Each structure stands twice: as structure tokens, then as C-alpha cells.
Amino acid sequence: MVTETVFAWPGIGRLAIQSIYNRDYPIVQCTVFLSAVLFIVINFCIDLIYGLLDPRVRAS
Image (cartoon, rainbow, N blue to C red; front, side, top):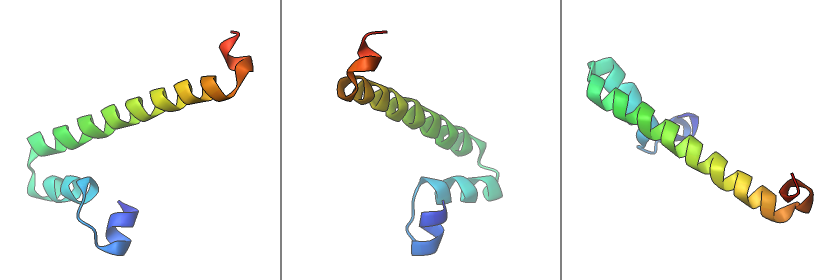
């Protein structure tokens, strides 16, 4: 949201804030859900890449 505010880029953070102000709860739920899914997927991908790059992690 900071990047969106500083550079005036419309994005999911701005959508979430506007939805909170407008009390549009289904969109707030959707933005929270999408953010959580994106966070989980990115962390999973980083764990896989870390296992490929560091052979000590693969052994355990």
C-alpha cells in the first residue's frame, strides 16, 4: 500500500482501503483472502527454491 500511495498506482491495497471506507465487506474479504493466498504461495515457492540452492536443507 505504501508503494501504491507514493507512486499513485491503483492496486489491491488501495481497493482494500476504499472498500473499508465504503463498507463493502465482500470486497474486503476477497482482498484479505487473495493477499493470504499470495503470501502462502510465495513462501512455498521460496521454500522450494531454497531447497534447490542449499543441499544441506534437502538432507533433512
